[in-house]
Length: 315
Image (cartoon, rainbow, N blue to C red; front, side, top):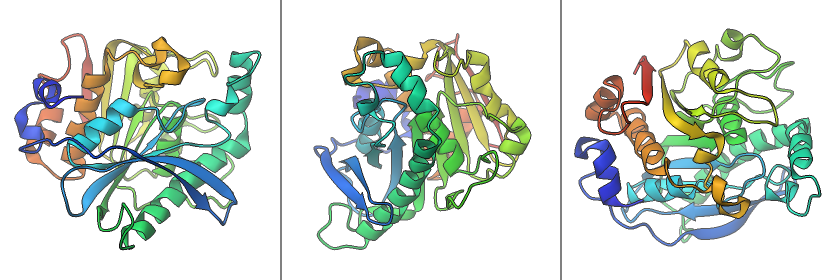
């Protein structure tokens, strides 16, 4: 993602005066001792010094910390800290070496324990970010603004975003520490409709603004979700600001950027648009920039194509 491509899509008013190359990505494994769980992470730090807003990125089913790379790079170049999580149990290990890749993914999607683990990963990541932010000598030491934390994810990652920000779980949270109120905004790429609860009840307690982004061909075989289903979370949310973007022609794979999964999952056609819209939303919600809010309300002119659709409420 280059400065020129972003400016072409989003307009100078919604971006910082100058975008600088980010530092090389840092790969590490973070240990959650309380759960006995190791999380592979990939950290992208911006060139800008001082406390910066941070976005946690959550991959889809069968993905990895390398996924959503285009979004992480764009965030870091625009002055955000980007933290990519990898979720063991619903990551690429699910399909690697599997005889029936589709069956392996479907089985993982039905694993309730892994769903709960993902939410625990998100809460742990917030805690660990804040802990490391207070440590001198840590790459994150003094680099994060605790008042500007956000989360973004694709597919199962969008499910993770929605529940971390307050979507109800059928039968209750069973001790899970959600919603995570320290997260101030979310981006759900390929949003997931609720199962087992009426939509308005499922989303009634969400308070943080969410950008819901999908495509006219955004369907999945694992759970049978159709493109029109992806709009349900936006339409059911009444208690928080929200935006919906529907990209003409975009498939489910268009958002992922999972190189290891094959060309279809790393096609860059829509990546500049998705990244520009995400930055516009975060500038509006985390930084309170009036030009970015106005651009969203106006339908993101210059970012989307005439065939795309943008809706907002409460922005």
